[in-house]
Image (cartoon, rainbow, N blue to C red; front, top):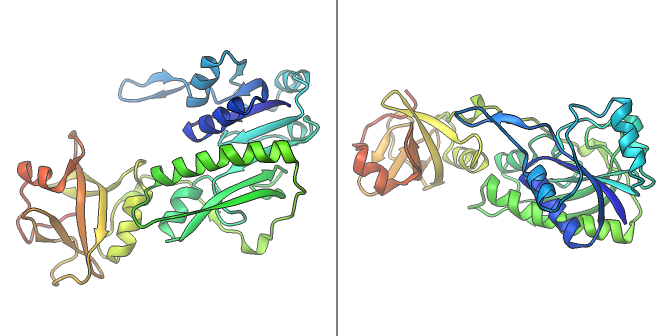
Length: 305
C-alpha cells in the first residue's frame, strides 16, 4: 500500500519506523520546518526528518497545508492513505479528502479521553490507571473522528511521561500497521465522555508544596522529561526528576526538609514526599545522596521560597 506520512517528534518517528518495517510504500514524508533549539538556538531537524532521510524518503516541510502547491503534491503522490502522528499542523478539509482511505491519526490516548496536545502528561497528572493508543479516522474536529482501533496500556506507579511515551509509540506502530492491513469498520466516539489535554506550560510545572504528596509525585512523573517539575532551593531553580509519597509527615511548614541525611524527605500538604533524583541549576541529574554531598539540606530547610 502506498501511503503519505505526516509527523514530527520521536513518537512519530517510531510510527514511521513501523510503517517502513512493515513494507509500506512511503510516497512522501511531511514534517514541520526545522526549528531553532538548544542554547545556541541552532536550526534542528525533527526526529521524523532524520529518520526519513536515513531511508532516502522524499521529505516536505511546509509551514501549513493550505496552499495549492502542497495540495497538488499530495494529490500527485497517489497515496491510498495518509498516516498522521503528532504532526503539529492542522489538516484542512481539502487535504482530509485527498487519499482514498482518508487521513488516519495515531493518538496517544483512549479517545474520547484526553483529546488534544498533551494526552500522556494529562493522564499521569489525573492519576489514570491506564492509557492507550487510538487509531482514528480524521475529520475536521480536534481528535473527534471515528475510532478504527484501540489498545490499552497500563500506567504503573513508577511510569514517567517518557516511559509511557515509549510504550505508546511502540503500540501505535503496531496498531497502525494492523489498521492499514485489515481496514476495520469505524465506530463513532461518545463525545459526552470527552476530556481535553491542554498543552503543558512551564508555569504549571512549578511545585506547590501545599498539595498532597501523591499529587506532587504525579506531577514529577508527568513532567519528566519535559519541562521538569521545579521548585527553588537557596533562591535558585531546583528540578525534581524522581520522587515518591512516603506516608504521613511529621508536621512543620510545607516544603520543609524532614530529614536530609542519606535521603531527602519533604513535608507536603498531606503526607511526606521522598526526593530521589534532583538537578540544581546548571548541574547534572543526581541521586539524593549525590546531591546532598554538594548541597546540604539540614532538617527545616525550606524549598519553594
